[in-house]
Length: 192
Image (cartoon, rainbow, N blue to C red):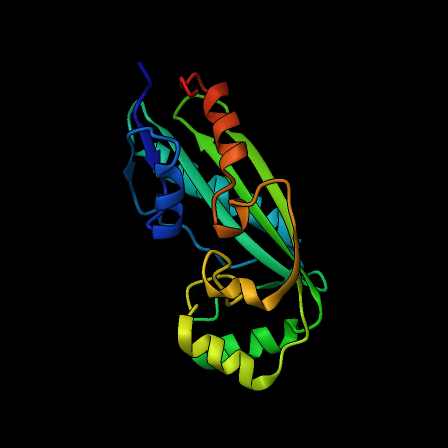
């Protein structure tokens, strides 16, 4: 029998992805300060936040394994946050037009008294050259204000790209399921 599983996130995207694995789980909100340290590398930031989310929830959860995940988009090595609103989303997409953006999607699996397991997926998204009116139409149609990079690749956002390069297509949505399944198996979960 699998131990209890908790998703240390309130993200609907991550919840929907984890549901694909067919394991019962609950969700808990991790209380973690997501402010990057001065000069912190985007991949290191994603890993640090995923670990902090998993370990924070695990500290208050008996006998459960907790999944924490975080995604940091980087343009020219600098982290991009979630836009939060229309103007910021338009500014992000304008800055990414015609460029490659790297998305670091980190994952941590923690249980009180056990070593934390970690993984990090690197996805490169190549944006096509975007016109201002295309960006505005996209932002108004999908309102991707809670998404790193200001798009939803599982929706209309796919039209913004020339290419996506990744080992795991689910990572860009917010939870790398290939790595998640690998870490869960390592923790003793029975998966197909």
